[in-house]
Length: 113
Image 1 (tube, rainbow, N blue to C red):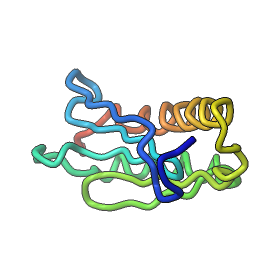
Image 2: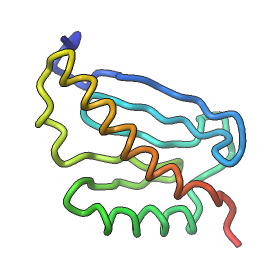
Image 3: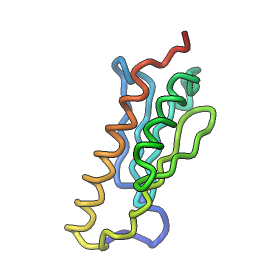
Image 4: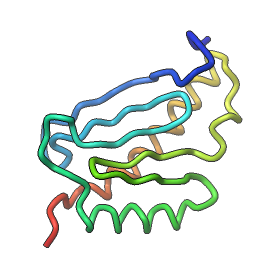
């Protein structure tokens, strides 16, 4: 079903309204990216990173987070348990959206106090 076995883009969302203004959510076949738009001057705040680290601890059997200056890569541990069928792709996308939604709540307070 996927064009290639390499990482394949499932979808991308650009947020333009607060509280997620300037964030980009990218769902790929094997990872989730949440990052500030490349033209944005915003970077991952210490508060947001701390909130994401707490979430990662709660979901330690589900995901691994990798941080960088502009965002986070979320690597679902069981991502390959979904078959490459139409139903499997939908289930994977739904699962990734659920994880991304939890992570996005950590970005609600983008500014360090």
